[in-house]
Length: 130
Image (tube, rainbow, N blue to C red; front, side, top):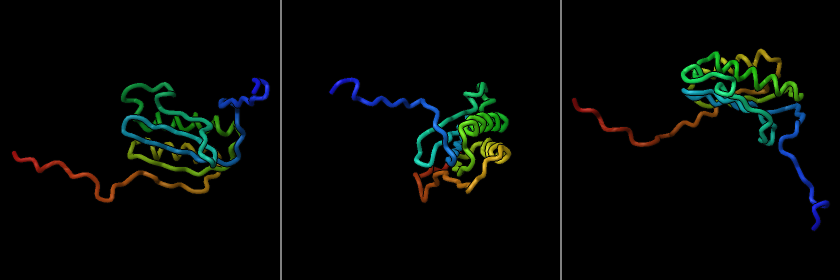
């Protein structure tokens, strides 16, 4: 098999998508926004740390808003018009990121909270005796 017959695919090409999924992962330390197509392949991502916030400022709602606006602007430039939102985590930036997405003009088909919740979970630590 020669090198000429082998097809080379680049992963960094610009993909134009009409519909996608916006994943918001809001932890206590950072907020990560990932935009994927409907098959789950990542188109663009952004986080509060990637937007230039450092330390405790990453965990603020304003940093989450900046990360969401950054990711949405890039995905709208690639042609996204409709999206679904999957939110996970208890962080302070989840509502602010959702507000920023709503203001962007993308039509949201549904918003789902996919935070993992234990049914019974691990055994709690023992009662403290003072």
